Length: 104
Ligand code: SF4
Ligand code: SF4
Image (cartoon, rainbow, N blue to C red):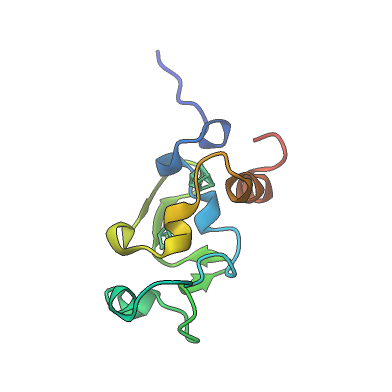
C-alpha cells in the first residue's frame, strides 16, 4: 500500500499552496503592464486594485485544499510575484512555516 507524503514535507507546489495563502500583502502587483492586469478577472482583484483579492490571507484565485491539492485559477496570467517565488526560497519557507509550522 502506498502512503501519500503530506504536502508540507515536500516542495510540490500543487500539493502546498502556502505562499498563496499566508498573507494578503503577498500577491501584490508590481511591474505588470496594464494589459497583463486587465487579463486577470476582476473578481480576483483586490478593491484597491493593488493586488489579488484575498480572504483571511488566502488568494481567492487559489482553489483546492491547502497542504493537499491546490491550483491557481489564473495560473497563465498570475502576477509577477507568483512567478518569481520558487520552491525553497526565503518567501516559500516563510509561508510554509507560517501555515504548516516550523517542522515543514
Ligand atoms: S513555492 Fe513554496 S510555499 Fe509556494 S506553493 Fe510552492 S512549495 Fe508551497
Ligand atoms: S494568483 Fe495564483 S499563484 Fe498567485 S497567489 Fe493567487 S493563487 Fe497563488
